[in-house]
Amino acid sequence: MNPPVRVLYLAGSGRSGSTLVTTVLGQYDGVFAAGELRYLWQRGEVENRPCGCGRPLRDCPLWRAVTQELPVERAATIAAGLRGRLRMRGLPALLRRHRRGIRPVPAHPDDAALADLYAAVARHTGARVVVDSSKLPPYGALVGALPGIDLRVLHLVRDPRATAFSWRRRRGLDGDTDPELMSRPPVWKAALLWLVWNTVTVRLWGDRAPGGYLRVRYEDLTADPEPTLRRIAAFAGVDPDGGPFTGPATVRLTPTHSVAGNPSRHRTGPVPITADVQWRRDLSRWSYALVTALTAAGLRRFGYPWRRGGPGPAGAERSAGDGRPAQGGPAAAGGRPVGVGRSGPARHEEG
Image (cartoon, rainbow, N blue to C red; front, top):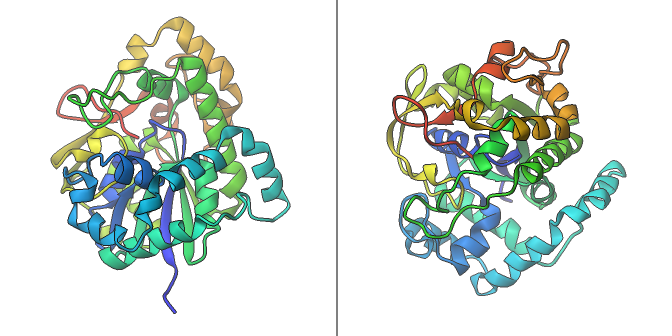
């Protein structure tokens, strides 16, 4: 009998650093950076969008080998089924089922194909850990209930004002030359999504710390990159000494085979992990106030300031999910929004 596939699932809201963390973790021995696997069926098989290695996914030798074991002729149907099963309107029922101790996302015939996907990825890559940055909590709950899956959840959190600003940037789905743009929700919708997805992530997995759940604020990651990535690697169950750091805040990246995600997943070579402070300067006062009001409960929970540039709330819950305080302190919480980019002001936000 094959051992279970360990999946490190990156959960939370978009634009919170999942692409950076996935790409860096993919440089460790025994780790496969799969990217957003929930999109394999639509963006990979149906649309044939680029793999992290740069080739169209159906032309990538690795994914060709993996998908030979999958019902790719049903890719569009599976993708549509996932969209229907994971809609936000199903969250109340999902949480009720979770509280009752039963499977949060009801079983479906397509689940066999999903389980086969993770098994095939592990088999063809030889990875001990598969990193899935799909983020959506309902999909993480679905994956965790599949047979043969050992799920660990990394909850990435970022200041909601920063994420709302990042969502408004115009960028191609797979880079600047891609005519198809990434979604650009208005700031009020980005704020509500931030609150919902982060709250649901805590509800589903917060009580599994320290072995099954780890929370990391991306501001703390960029304030102290190497120790934070080492802690994440150890949580995932891989050797934390085998990372790609060439300096305290610089990583050397080689191509991955990630499915979907921020266009920065294609970056290779030396990459400094730097702070992106543009939102502090360019997010309008009205937008800042609106996002702050809509996410007030989450700001306090995750230790973010209410006032622009102010200190974090006294006594805020700043645990990283393992019973220890998160790295960085109030200055990291409020003073260093994040990104990854070339030397100088960062131009690429992650996740």
